[in-house]
Amino acid sequence: MRRLSTLAFRNLWTRKARTVLTVTGIVLGVATVFAISITGASTAKSLEDFFAQSSGRADLSITGAADSSTGFRRRLLRRVQEFPSVEMAVANTWDQSLLLGHDDEVSLQVMGIDPETDRQVRSYEVEQGRFLSAEDRRYTMMLVSPLAEKYGIEVGDEVELMVAEGTEVFQVVGLLKDKGAGRLNLGRVAFVPLDVAQRVFERGRRVDQIDLVAAPAVANDKVALRQLKEDLQAELGAAYVVDYPAAVGQSVAGALSGFNAAMSMFSVIALLVGAMLIYNTFAMTVVERTREIGLLRALGASKGQLLRLVLSEALFLGLGSTALGLAGGPALAFPLMKLMSKMMGGFPLESFVMPPVGAVQGLVVGLVVTFVAALLPAWRGSRISPIEALREARIQREGFLLRRGWIIGLALLAVVVADQFVTFLSGELFFITLFLGATLLVPQTIALLERAIRLGVTAVYGQPGRLGSMNLQRSKGRVSLTVGVLMVGVTMLIAISSMSASFTAEVHEWMEAALAGDLYISSFRPLRLQLMRHLREGRAWGR
Image (cartoon, rainbow, N blue to C red; front, side, top):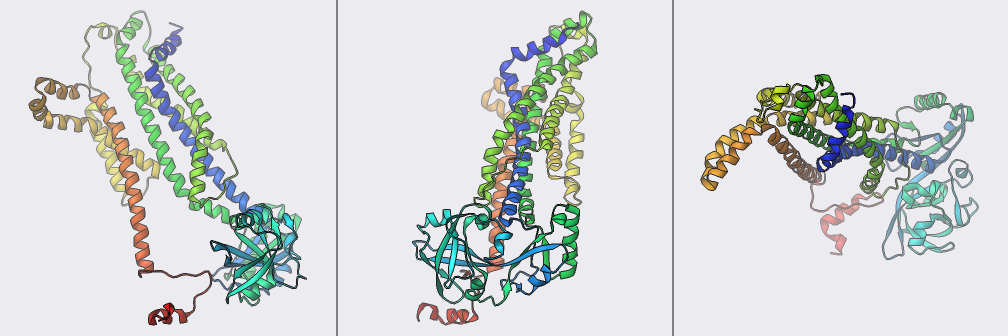
């Protein structure tokens, strides 16, 4: 009786197909939980690194609070430079433009920088040519090397750029590597001298952003840097926003939290299906090994020993499956990260982070789900008496969940309905509650449906049909599990289709409300009211 654990391993090995199926469900759930955690952490880290790299040494950035293309006055720069603990500050402008003279007009951002000071704040790596100079007597610009290579632009070439009034010709004096500042706007950026940008885009003395470098003692102290940020914000007032350069990446990551929430739902589904497979596995195991359990009881095995026997099988499954799931999580994270990158318009996710919290979550979920799913069959098996187990035919008694589970199911569904009025369930918990409530109603639903269809099935298939229909009543537990798995699949298909249709309808509704018209005209530069009069009179087409 001391070596019962060997029987647990032998049972799993004997029923290989069922063991593999159960393991697959647990592995999929654990791997999905870990992969989602990796994808979320890697996305956030990639965004932070991207914006931190493009901002260079800048510790803080200042922008206008109002959403305006005109920016704010450059005289704010001197005010910021004189602020205590500010070592250096540089101003820049951002303008949307078109690069002409190619088969396709190239849309890009034009960044106006101070050639003498901006290199001390931002990182520029010149691959060919030279950096901008304030002494240049003509309009010059720098492009990022991959963009220039794509459109056949070389150092010394002259390119035509759309500006506020018509076009201007610029000479390309340098090509930058796809690093540091060259990664701004995913490389679709051109750098020109600040005074030139203000002139050709009619910005006057206005700028769009000020980047500042704090004194080393402040920059290396998070508390001191946060205090400097708060002091600057209080000094400048609500007309400006003082923030960390990488905060944009953090906000984008936050905006994508909905994707992570949706993926978490898939992991919950995988775990629920895995739990049902585990429960079914051990329920069938107990039924098939009833005589074996009776012999063990007759030989002196206690209820506790039999309970530990079945739970040790669950432990083998849980530990092995969880280990495989944690190993497969990083592999599953790669396609998820590619999907995330595609959703972000091709943004490169170059950081790969495996958060310990995600691994712990996968470990706990895998073991807990396995243990809880196996506990009820194990408890039932340990309560079988030797005489009852050794009978040739043993009457299967319905458990409490089959007889009274519908009461709990209705209560859970009532909680789901109440959540529609007073939200208190999280997304995952809402789905689990809904799923469990519906699953607990399955046995009673099967009984009602069986009585309703018995006559019809008998009329079509005769006596075999009647026996098959009545067999549903004799195997409510197994049928309920099968129906539950099918219910999850159908529910997810409907849910995904509904989400897609709802999102499309929402976008169309927003467009109808926001745009109203049949056609929409936009431009990278401000449109004049005169264009509206020309369109009304039909003069835009030469009439």
